[in-house]
Length: 244
Image: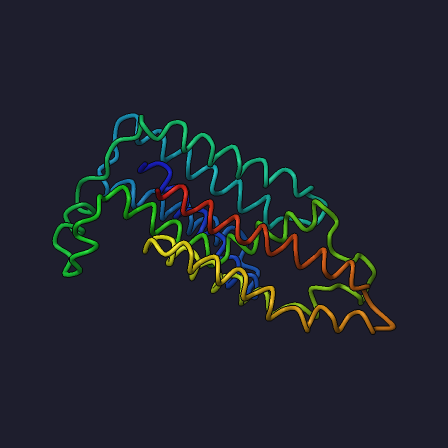
């Protein structure tokens, strides 16, 4: 599972850095951060031999993801989504071949003062770390790409539904973290309540578009909300499956 953990950490840090560095337009900085994190964790985890080849390839995938997912608008969203899906599928299929996390990283986990973390397997802890990072920004990126691929956002200039439902960019990561945390704690039923509560809370906001004379129709906004929400939930639930 170490390869899968490195992949998730690299993706999560790259997208998180993009969300901050976009203001400064620092070219290649987010991808460099993600790739360097993969390399550092690979070295600290004593992943050598064929594991070294694996994490070098993972670093390359992280860079490619950053350039495609955050590239020009003329890049079709199917390309980064296909890259992400293929990388995750290969990570799961090849996980039995991955070497175990060892070295200074494993020693630090063994000596950590938090008992629940010290009892966790190093590989599992790495996947959980990567999963948490993915919820912060990568989930938003995946949602945006799927919305673009399905044309679920009103393309009319000045009438983009995202400008009026922009709170989802902040609520999405918090919601995914809550769902993942409850799932890891074994409280799957409580996680389902979070999903149900979001629909109830958003209902009045969605209905406000029914009376709007300008801008997107309620059908367009509802489609945008449903597609974005389900993709966001799948990110957190899919991460929970990977950890399990």
